[in-house]
Image 1: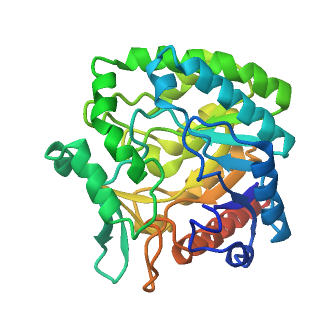
Image 2: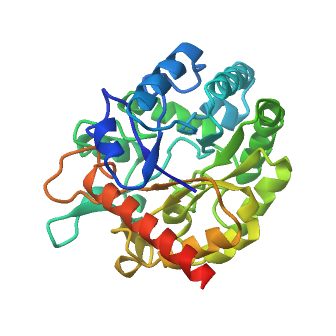
Length: 355
């Protein structure tokens, strides 16, 4: 297992590589080329420059998050062919730089969805939160506007300001698109890229939908054990795998996370581990500690060890604590605490296995 930390780049992150290097047990960074528009190919020279910067700081770059999938691919439009070719070229270039795992998602229009980027936790900390009742009374435009206004000046992944003007057009394009349409278009995409991944030695790791249910009438398809097993069968290859996000899947009480890991663990290549506190159709993100939320982090880690997981882990979204001002969910302090906690739980579970 390698403990990693998400990094948005020198110009787009308040957290420096030097600071990440000082977190005990964190040896890798999970970056992306956030300056490139979705659908553009990733030039090899830009990838190598990013890798050089990371390695100079004493960290590794073997896992990427995210090479985003263009909406035309998800919609199955004729124009998807050029975007798939760009994606294939990006895979080839990333493999040349030594990247082994690529995280991506297939969520239509939005990535993760929250209704509050700074929910008051009552102790001076704030966190990301979701209230299903608030979603029902908002338009997508309202959501984009609120995310933009409350992001402390930082672009939130999947909620970039420049996409706001496309929302009405995108929703019109998705009108009538069903879950089965998405499945069909995902299968088409996978059948194009997985042979290239097999050739290059790169593993794709799809991120589950966050939250794992339909939003604004848009279908979500990667949300539980049945949909995950269906996904893995679309192209039954070791290069077609999962990012197991405990916060995304754990937002639904129907998902038994340790059991899911034990069922599909041989295809989990990347794990986002965080905790959430569920309250009906609401949830908020908590500290990573098991007692803080609804998820048993020890049992999740134990399940990963049971299946022989040897991939990449990162502490996922953190709270804003100690007065830190940063991209919501992506500050230094709470994610550093999370990494230390996860490393401790991993060590404890490992030693318990030997006794």
